[in-house]
Image (cartoon, rainbow over the protein chains, first blue to last red):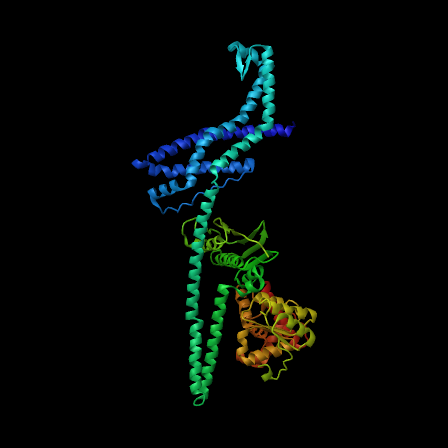
Length: 425
Length: 200
């Protein structure tokens, strides 16, 4: 039994006390508020109070998740459904929140937290306080105590004189020893209980995953349908039209070649021009579908080539030991391309930095600029115009379970981070 | 087409490995290579050309592609030896221009596609004009980079050949290029020009 063990036990006791307070005060108050608020929905008042109360409950649960991560390294996932911003109206928002299984998990947890959770947490400080009290009794505190109440029951020991006070002291020491041994475990147990109630069960997690998949599949289909329409239109108005013109010129040339060679030569030149234009348009189109450098060299060089085309200086760092699968490469490429285009268009930056690396089973990409900032990820923060590009990136990445994070304080700098789980070959 | 212009075609090959063998065994005066070749259909042709130039420095290679990238242009120019061309396949339509480029490369010059040059120029637009060149001189060096002779530049800019010669010697002086064989200086000037574009 060394000093660190003792310190840990004391720290755990302090944490246990804090957790118990949170449970006995926070959880009780919030549960009462929630129950009253939901009960008042039929007479209308509840419609106003329920969403803010439930949001408080979520914040309360979120704090506990944070503590779980900080104090016992335990990650408890949340899995609330996102609320559509401001759109749904009062009743709609209420019913959305109440239909979210995560909300009911929160409320259930409040009940557990204020009873079993608080008791578990309280046990840690209780062991230390009782232990110290027992020792103090043995040290002489017994005489005023016994004078007030004879016999004084210290747990199961009736303290009535010096001898029994000594027994209480022994018991106190035993409690202290126990505290040193189990206090950290008690706090961990509290968080395990929290996790068990608060975390969606397997079925719930699967359900949420299916929901996300359905959504991202929808997005992917929408996007690819729109892409195909764009390609069709571009071909129809561009290369196809040029080829028709070329055919017409050549047909006329055939008729004119003997009668009017000079005019025929002019038309041949025109036909050649049309073919060159058709090729240019096809080239641009191909670049938009699947950039040649990406096919030839992979993501790293494709991003380098992209950076060379920008009107702004860009530094590209690539640490990739192989190539990802083609669809992932393509999604990542267009995501970077979009992020770079945003930086050029909105940020007014002097330097853009792109980093690509593959660590921990994920492709990680950051695009940072020193511009004016103020970018928002579209799907979260309303539907501002500035966000649409970032929302597009999010959709692209979503198909591959990729995520996007944007840090862009007003005044800059902006950093867009993307992460796509994938393997390199 | 090359035969129509009095070239001897010593070999016509269809894949990367065959190309490597032909370049090593036949040592042609100039090679015309497509970036994308079987079997991998990636940038195999470009890689073969770069490898051949490492094995035989300065071996003239004209690379053709459906698309041009500054990235590839930089790689081709990195050894600073000249004898390099990089053109869009479309340029083959203009037989005179294409044959001119092949000859230019075979002589040890450079022939960069106008597309590469214009990409470089659009990047440079906001930067300091390079080495204090005047707009007129920039126009000349841009045409030089495409592999045109003084006469061709003069025709294109509708000025006399003497005026072009004056511009070019100003360019050489401003870029600090030593007096030597004119062709070689042209190559160096173009390289300096492209290099700065790539570094910007």
